[in-house]
Length: 118
Image (tube, rainbow, N blue to C red; front, side, top):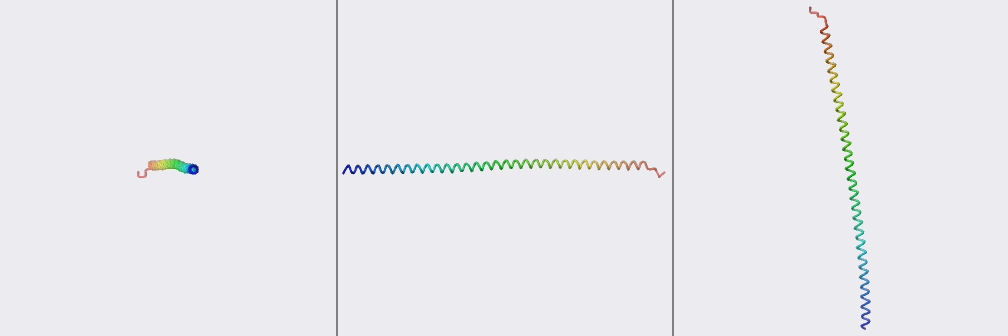
């Protein structure tokens, strides 16, 4: 009887040990799978952050490019405006010079008229 009981106890112990090993192996596989899934989620998060950073940098570069273009255009407008002002000033000076010339000619004509009051 004792031999049978020991054999049964040994068989139970062996079975329990095998079940425990199976549960341990299953738990290890699940933990490994969970770590893999977490790593995949983290990798995707990092990819998303990297893409967001790339887009942010591209946007900043585009903003800088547009700003430089706007500054260049503003400088071009300033130069054109200065040229217009300069041409206007030159035209105004020419009109004044022409007016002065005509006035001088008129004065000369007046001076050259025969004096009819004599």
